[in-house]
Image 1 (spheres, one colour):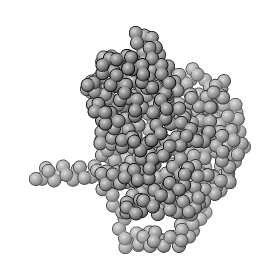
Image 2 (tube, helix red, strand yellow; image 1 turned 45 degrees about the horizontal axis):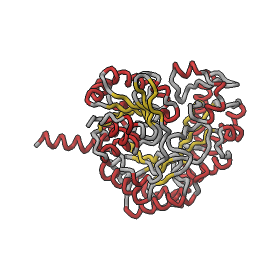
Image 3 (tube, rainbow, N blue to C red; image 1 turned 90 degrees about the horizontal axis):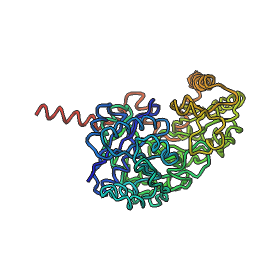
Length: 478
């Protein structure tokens, strides 16, 4: 049986905290279940020499890359083809723009849509060089003799997420991630899809619906992660973790019932939380929430189809702080038609809400989104084909700002907010809010006061890397 290498291509700039990837680990688990030999490689934690060796060891080279990094994936595919390998591309960008890969001449196949079921089906057909069977693989596009021989529609979304195997974390060096990330961050998915209609989101891969895993299996996986890897923190990478509040209450109850002790982070929307839920999440270990606000201007929120108001944003931030949870927010500058007045409105809302960290990106219309279709006339396609897109640059030609001005606005918004946030009036206000929180939650107040006085030791978390090092030293000594 041909051996398959599934690779995650590193970004040109690592903007997010380094942590394991989930996409290729889900695919790796599906191949293991089908008894297909597989190796995983995350280029972010290896060097080019290792990547070349991994390509040499395998027969079929699969790539996964986000839109900003597709040119790097194409470059690696070119190398793999030069070594006589078969190449295949998957993921969100491949699901909306197969041509950029197939037309490059460096990819034999593209697999669109969720691939946990279709990738094993494809590889089994490939093993027998059975083009008839390959023609029946949903989502497969294939080149043969320089021509597009197969172009199948993406498969239906996987409805029963509980039937998927758990991610094959054992196929990646988890201790390496923990060595490179001081927080020892781990990831988990509990849902797929998002029903909201924000114009900048690619939805081809996971869809507009909302599919959930069962509470028991979610907490089983959490327990496995905690007991096997002892991470510092677990990030729920769901697009909107708290869309259905009842399921999060149930998950928190089960975490508490099992006595699991770990810190975790949620991604969600400002209109998908309330104070009782936030308090429950905190009791179960949630210490941070990441909110996608995008703007504090109602006009821009409407342009982006966020279906939010500044009032809801501010109230969610205040509830989050009152519940003892730290908030990080994502904003966008340079949305279509945005003016200096809109940016000033956002800055006012930021100070009313008082989140703990602000991350600002430049508006980027991606192919396969409503923003691409609606604003194509403003996109410099030559720039897009020659340069990376990222949080601080875009090929979108704005009506009121140059790219240099947008970058300055982006930086200044963060700088101005941080100066305000760390000023003594705001520090005093946060101190008073924390004091009120500890009065409301004396069990946490006692611990915090005890640590401040040196009476209670800080929590200690031993990583896999620590254990491996200790075991190595013990073996050397023995």
